[in-house]
Image: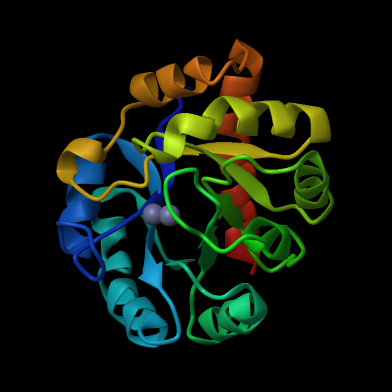
Amino acid sequence: MRARRCDFHMHTSMSDGELLPMELIRRSAAMDHRAIAITDHASFSNLEWIVRDVAADCKKADAWGMEAIPGVELTHVPVRYIDEAVRKARKAGAEIIIVHGETPVEPVEKGTNHKVVSNPDVDILAHPGMMTIEDAELAAKNDIILEITCRKGHSLANGHVANMARDSGATVVVNTDAHSPSDLSTMQFATTVARGAGMSPEEVRAAMVSNPEKLLKRLRRS
Ligand SMILES: [Zn+2]
Ligand SMILES: [Zn+2]
């Protein structure tokens, strides 16, 4: 059967994205997405209401034959408080937790990647930038997924992240980090981004099809 797109990193007007969750879900359905995660920027100030409000629209995605998963992207949380924020996000009902990693284009606190891959309750380390092989190995051990990103700027380190994942055995997915309707990606475009990061056709297939399947299974269990 033909594989459909899964995208686990997307923003709405609940943070700095353009669309309401419902419109993001509609546009994703119209582009034949199988599943999306809505992961607005969150910290202690807003994570409870974001998760609650986004979940209200996610529950209606079944009308269009797709899954929408309410989550958060913990963003610029001080390293020493990341574990606390993860606990709080789970308690608030976040079904997927991703954390804004050490992208080359923002002053993310050093040590964020290491703290994130040390916490098995995190699902995805987003745009990890120039991560170390030790942190990639820890991600593999704790089953934290590394992200190849379609987002301009963050994507500058994609080739390095793909190498670290290959050398450590860590799992990879390809996300858009969409903020606008034009950021949504087809299977074809996401494949081009992953191939451009130096991934082989087999690695791309895993990142686009089997790894998303595994993640969806894990999210349903929790
Ligand atoms: Zn981010
Ligand atoms: Zn993001």
